[in-house]
Structure formats: structure tokens, C-alpha cells
Image (cartoon, rainbow, N blue to C red; front, side, top):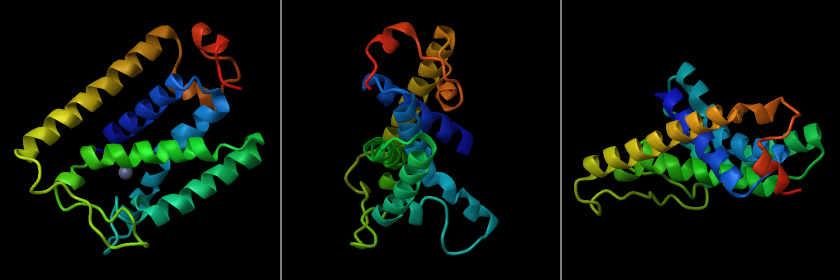
Length: 177
Ligand SMILES: [Zn+2]
């Protein structure tokens, strides 16, 4: 369900960016941060012990990928956006904890390589399957509604990547520079 995951990750980051009234370069940073950890889906092409959602979804993996994104955006746009890339990454991991059910299930080693501690809610949440289903349905519906709303307003969320025109009016007037 990668596509569903990506829509959710992108829209939640985009929504956060709107809340903070980010300009387009910072929007690129936060949405890129929100997607980049899933570059590890190419591991599907190389079956082995490392699978999707492992190495890149740790402190070490996030730092490396976040640094690459920050440098890439800096070379492209000449602006320093590390904190927004970081916020995108935090939003990704927070959502994955719910979305892919891992924190309700076998958990993740979030602090790797600093620590091998596995973070999980297994045993703490009663009816974990039900809680997971409700939470992920809620987050996904929220993303789809946000997407529809943006499209109706003419503010296609992906427009920040290639379109130099400003975003919608109320936002343009208060955008963070
Ligand atoms: Zn992920």
C-alpha cells in the first residue's frame, strides 16, 4: 500500500507546512523529509535481511538521509532548510508508527545505532488491531479530505515543486520568508 502511505505522508507534511505558513522552498524541504525515508522500498528488489522500514527509519538512517536532502536543497535553492527537513522526517516516523502498525506490533529500533532498544506498544494497548484500524483510517481520511480541499482551492499540493507562482491568497500574504 505504498501509494496510500505516500499520499498520507505527503499531505500531513503539506498540512504542517501550511500551518507554519512556509514558503515554497521550505515546503519542498518538509515534504521531501516526509518522503525520503521510504527510499528503502528499493530493498524490495534485493530480498534479504534488511527490509522496508528498518535501517532508514532509525536515528542513524534519518540523519544521513536528512543531511543528503538538506545539502541537495541548498545546492538547488541556496537556502538552508535543515529544520524543515527534520520536521518532515519526524512526521514520517510518527505516522509510520501508526500506519504500518509496527509500534503496535514487533516495534522499531528507533535509536539505532545508539541503542538497540525496540519501541513498541505491544502489550500496552488493549485491542491493538482495532485501535490501529481506527487511527490509520482517521489519518488516511484526513489526508484525502485535505487533498480534495487543496485541489478545489486550486492549490495542488505538488505544485510547490515546479511552479513559481505563489500559493493561495490568504497564505501568500502571511508567508514566512
Ligand atoms: Zn516509512
